[in-house]
Length: 76
Image (tube, rainbow, N blue to C red; front, side, top):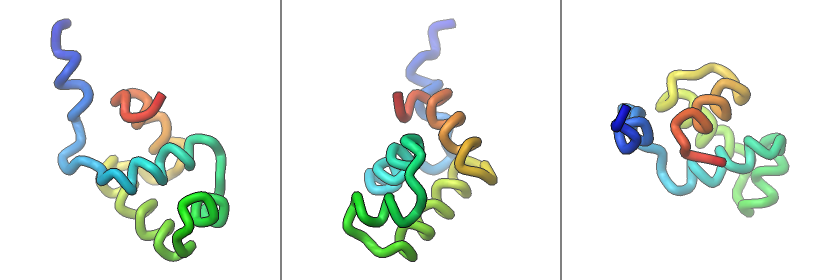
């Protein structure tokens, strides 16, 4: 198949740069508190980003989100 550019953009609504930051840290195994500390934002803000990520990616768990992000080549 020659649709490699298509596979990168399969989300109905793209993630924001901040949501990608949260997703990358989520992939390293950090919890919400760890992500909040790393990005110097409130835990409630992290939870909001996580909810947006789940909604945009149509997933219900962190593992699903990370797996889907890797499939879409959003994260290594």
